[in-house]
Length: 192
Image 1 (cartoon, rainbow, N blue to C red):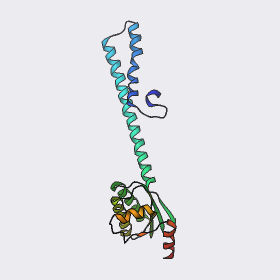
Image 2: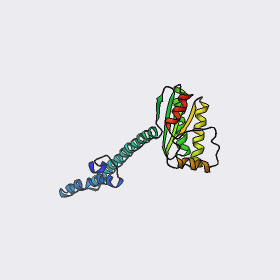
Image 3: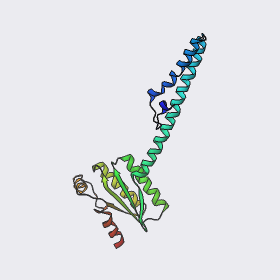
Image 4: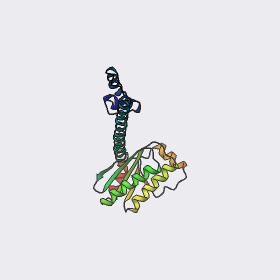
């Protein structure tokens, strides 16, 4: 079983065939005692093939559950929400953005805003890998969604590279409050 599952529970299909080979020592003993009959071989073969199949199904289910748990953990970590002041939260977006991921982030932020009374949402994009027109449009959607919930959105983490990319995209970002750092956004919030 350890050979099949591996020390860390990792499953490999080619290793599962070893359970089928478990029948051979039994068949050898039957042959040595002249008890080797086709019916017995068929029953043993069917048993060990069934065992192999059930092990494969069990391990696939475990692997699927582990992947689902990992995906949920990644989704929670990919855009963490932290309350950083009385009525202010910060959402840090790291990595690459696509339509699906932004929709999940928007849902997460809107759900949080629905449950709490938050006036200000700081969205930090300083760790986004690639700023292109699709990503910029998604950020505008996030900004608009925050406004529709009655909160103010502040976009922070604007690096020179991101600023340069945004200027070349020919998108209207005039309604988005942008800051190079979270500190500058906080100073603006506290000053209001």
